[in-house]
Image (cartoon, rainbow, N blue to C red; front, side, top):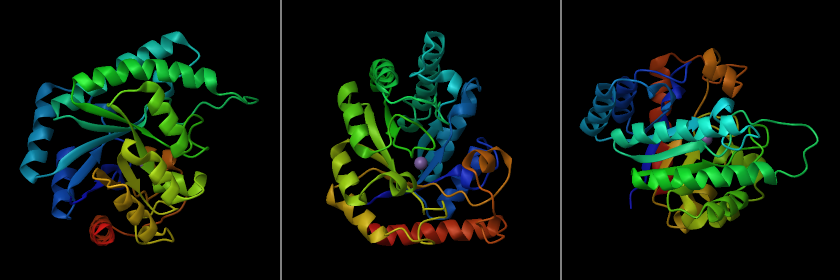
Length: 291
Ligand code: MN
């Protein structure tokens, strides 16, 4: 099966919001099959907006996928029951919106929050884990009924405490035990935490539902030292057929630059046309690598 290759819209933006229809057309024109967007700011928008985005994607022949780092005030692993309750309601709103746009995967730090809450001196994360699993069971069951798959993004230690390796994510998904609770691996985070790309991808196996790619410094794939032969070979090895979405961040500034901690220009001084060319090149590169 041909892999669906995508890009996260915030490559081009300084905020976690934008004119998604503009980026749908751009991504399709640059050769992508998928555009990933952040659903946070779609909450409370008029129904017509969801229909328009869905129609634009259908017209462009593009799939939509979604990614979000849940804000701390909606953390379902929180020690505060009121925050957990708000978190469950918040994610149900996201699921409702994504259903209206045609369903599909929502990935990210759904099991906790971003950036993760760090409390000094903790050597046992089980209470956070257990609260998270409990609420994720309810959310996954809700997602199942609404054509949405929740993908737990495994991230590095500097961004969250709960799921830092594929092995932990497998254990988490088994505890939640729902077909709507699956794994998202990201080469940027794997590079920091995993012993081996092949072993991590193999460990996730059939639970791997979504995949993020990027270089170690978050440049587009092909511009750094990641071993794409190994990574793409491992994806083929498990018969992965999901989306492969690049998540490059190369420019300073705005909320995106600050949250991602881009402290130098990694774009080579590109204007928007230059960014477009770099994205199109990375899309071709990864399509060749995936075979
Ligand atoms: Mn990612």
